[in-house]
Image 1: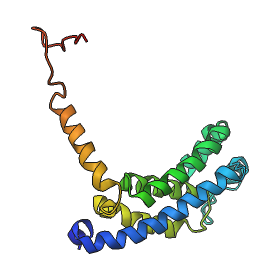
Image 2: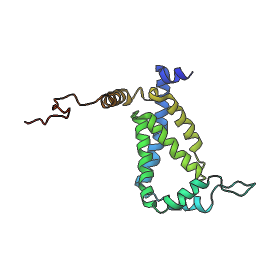
Image 3: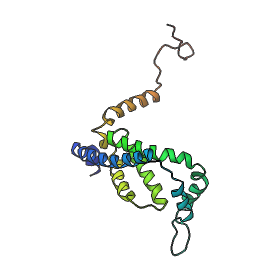
Image 4: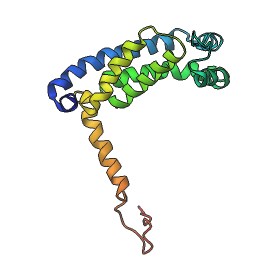
Length: 181
């Protein structure tokens, strides 16, 4: 089944529809935040003052996440007010275009988990499920998209770097020669 999801052309067609839907959800959420004056400060303060607690023991369920919000995110809220909407928009754009699709799905799921850790359910479980499916499909999810052209170029560049990318003239010491025009 996993081979079919990752290699079959019909699966790629299904993932095209799925990733465009998912991408639209992310892109529009990011766009509304970019154009509507987004401020995460109240949300983060609420997650710190009313964190998720175990009802039986009254202990924090995600103490490290609460500490992260309190000691890092809140003091840098202005920065988060910029990166959250841009991140959402770029995840959506990547999914819609099929550009770095697996990375876009991963970062979308990461943001969804952050929202869940803060206590917001909303559509996050649904988006995690769909993002997980796109992530599992790997490169097949972007087969009908920019990834079809982009990933071979990335592989070629990576191989070139791995195996000593410079093939031009060298000095006797092996360093590249200066080329004069």
